[in-house]
Length: 310
Ligand code: IPD
Image (cartoon, rainbow, N blue to C red; front, side, top):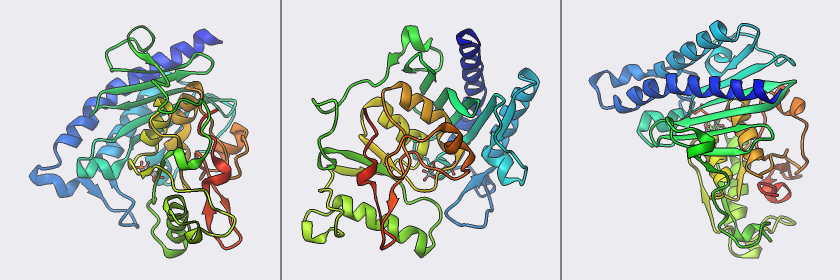
């Protein structure tokens, strides 16, 4: 029921309030002599994890286990630790304790905890909190999306999303008028990164002759990489970014973002621009906010996926 969803939103905000000061403490301690201890080694030098990610996830997870006894949990660090966390129809909290860990380590302020709740495998409540910028993004299915500060009541004191659209037309006529967000991702093997770089190049190239055949989309106004899937999605939800395109997101990166973007009037689609059912989105393990189709030459293009906004 709506009342239940509202109470889950309250609980999600409560979790954000618990996590915020801990994330902030870690963010501010990066110049301390113990800084080296911040990093926990993973196999890939571009895929960072810190003691703070683990600490925040543990805290949030035990709060959920204590207060929402019948609910399930999927978290980035829990899965990284080897636990099996399959998605079921049961209410499931899907959490990234620190989305934008590389930003967190470097002191770049696009860092957030991302807390999503699915019921019947569909995201229905989303809370994304950036404690560095004190931005709290919230949404409940059917009730709109809001941006507020952590101590404000989102609906009474916050602002409904999107805040504004930079273009007069509600729908973008072409990618050449768009500000686009994307990411290189943490997997830097040639065969993974080359098609992504090619797509970004195709979006940026000015001369039609520079573009891959059949993929001339015109050069975008600009490309931005905020370094956090949640923050990229919230830029779309605010009407600052027209399209966010990434290959290789995980469910904890995007679960909360999906419901907030949708409630802000945006769309989340698969690689071919199709609206996907949420079950498909969330059981895929690795899935995208807006994913590109693979070209025959292995390149990818966001052209068919321009659907960040209705
Ligand atoms: C990552 C960030 C990054 C995106 C990756 C995510 P993490 O999350 O959001 O910007 O490119 O797809 O996995 O590792 O910082 O939690």
